[in-house]
Length: 405
Image 1 (tube, helix red, strand yellow):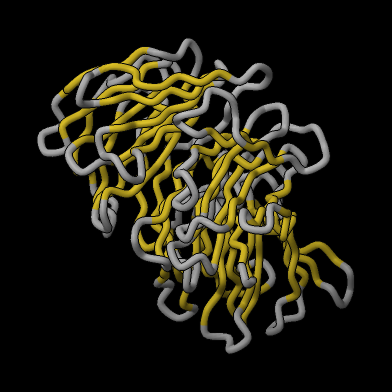
Image 2 (cartoon, rainbow, N blue to C red):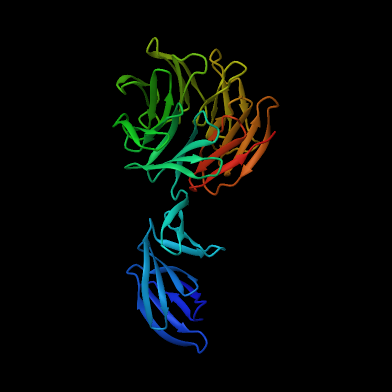
């Protein structure tokens, strides 16, 4: 799998898939020895002076000293994941270690102590959200990972893992993160350390696809087409609205009226619920494609904005049955997600061609087309200061876009 030249002896060292270190005399081109080192393959090698560092498939980094047929293990460290890469840092004090769990460690050469430098995602990322802070966001992924990320240096501030795939995420203030899950549960995490703060098991049949936060209530929606209301203080069930017959793809609390909640679905319907009357107060239907998300303008008439599977962003006024505006990019393709900047001027949309398009709603024109994803864009979120936009997708990538206009 890998090979290296020992700077001390000039020998060629190679690792094999069966976990042996093979030694060759490079000057005479003679095979000298094959030494069993690991039971799960040697995937990477690097050398420093008379020492050889070996990364194995069992997650261990071993430090060897010796030459020819005589080698001794003088140090060992156990890391998370198969060791796929070892590189000696320029100052020679530490070895940078990469693993197949998308973690990067810094390993001290002398005592084999290590620290986590960076980690990334290895599976489909389903959601991203900001709280009130512009330098901190949260992501959830299909492998059950919940991460709190520092946007200033892209480091993971806190990490947790659930029992199944996480589907959506939002903040409740700066200290609490709400997540919806594949098993129908709503799980709450501390935004500072990702410790579990509570859960509502089986709050939906099938996946929880959307979560929204009000002053007194939490709102959830799922594959079952239902929108449910939960007491924010004790997580008790308050009520249910079943207006959709397909998966709910967007959910939000009205900007002006806390008693109004809006949802949209792949069934091509946009529904507004009135919590005071416990009834549906508005219902709108699109003739063609289903809806993949929802946002609400903070200017104009506070219209709802919904991207569609047939390539439009529809604008809905509560007093008008038909859309009052439709944006398109000149091509017929699916729009996958939507995000409106905090000031309400800029609208970002994930597109089927793997780009993020940004509209200026004042000029009614596309001002940026951002390309960086290699898989479907699933979710996106603006930083509260509007200086950055974060998009995530099926390619396990988190793309951060600096925005200046």
